Image 1 (cartoon, rainbow over the protein chains, first blue to last red):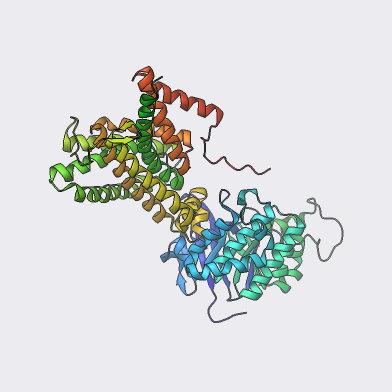
Image 2 (cartoon, each protein chain N blue to C red):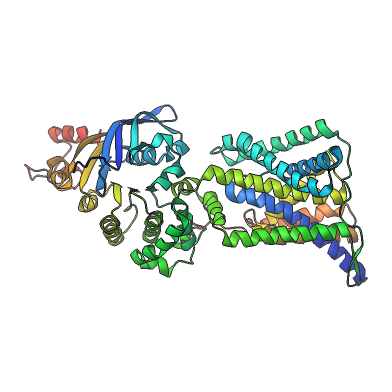
Length: 271
Length: 292
């Protein structure tokens, strides 16, 4: 999919925390309009940092975009504020759900109406409750008392209220049971289909991510090491071995670190 | 027991309490949105009272013009304080910001002394002085009208916070700044707005308190009693500020009337210690939600 203008285009960005720790080293990726793009990588590769750089929440953590550019909908995000970007249609569902615990479920959704035209946003409450009937049942309860899965639903529900062009999803499966994970990913696919919302999906659960994504990027230590359509990636030997846990392609024996060739191959990935 | 005396003291106590509640409201507002414990609240009240002197006595404007001007000017002061002193401290730890507000209090006292000197002043008399009788009990008109204004302000805020969407934005900002940003809430604007509104309320409180007891640079000590009020009521509860304000006002005046003036502070601070032991988050404050 090489549509004329991607909704999100990241060009060669470098991000440094606290002026000392470089996390992203020349990372580039793009999300075509209407597509779901998965961004995979091991812990500490810089996936969450990438999302924060896009939504500009980086500055709250003393991170800084040193070079490169991030273009959302034809305009650089650098000229915008974090809340301004949300109003332009870029919604970041942060890692760990981050619901407002002392607010009720409904108030959590109300908070998200700031991202949208207010009358427009009010109409979308119905939609959220249709996607997540559970939230409707618990709408007057405090969000802090929801289960992890329900909180993730609420986090995605807030994004739906905002009706964005693109949702940045940071590990929606984090800490969820396999059943909930499946349900959440089903909803993600539905939102993409029915609302036409583009998504940039950060995941550890590669198999799940590939099930909904059209295109995938794999990053290691701050840059992209491999990318391609998901069908291609799923069949890639290295991806199968290191991300999908399916073992090597040529030899069936159990892998061991004594096997130096394997170790070197793995090191190239996970250094 | 003299019931008339008892009820008169009670009325005076409720009146004092109403003023505590207004000052507490300003305090709670700032804490609720920004998690800043503003130790300069009493000084902000004092600044408001002096600005009122500036307009009504200094420029000799009529009282009914001076009051709105004072409220606006103090609001502006609050906004300036937020932009220049509080905003750069965002993200620093709570103790640092706490210390900054203590410093701010001293700065305000210093500024006031430069302009108006250290001697106590009296505010222009503008509150009607006909005595108020409720049943047979006498109520000082200043305290009575002061309470009425306080009640209206607090009532207004309680309603607005339940119904207005901004109330949600404010609580969301208080709960999780980054998440509030990611909802499209203009967090810096929330901060500025809260300081401006709190300073405006402080101005009203300052004018009321000043017209009852006079104004002096040491008026900021009033902030200490307000701190007791908000800790008892719960730092983040508007309703708590109201109830604890009246409660503390009553305790204080009863202790003053029956035990002697020197027991006022003893009574309120003993109450504070008691509340902290039994309910550390105050009567109406939020407990942290612990998900098991």
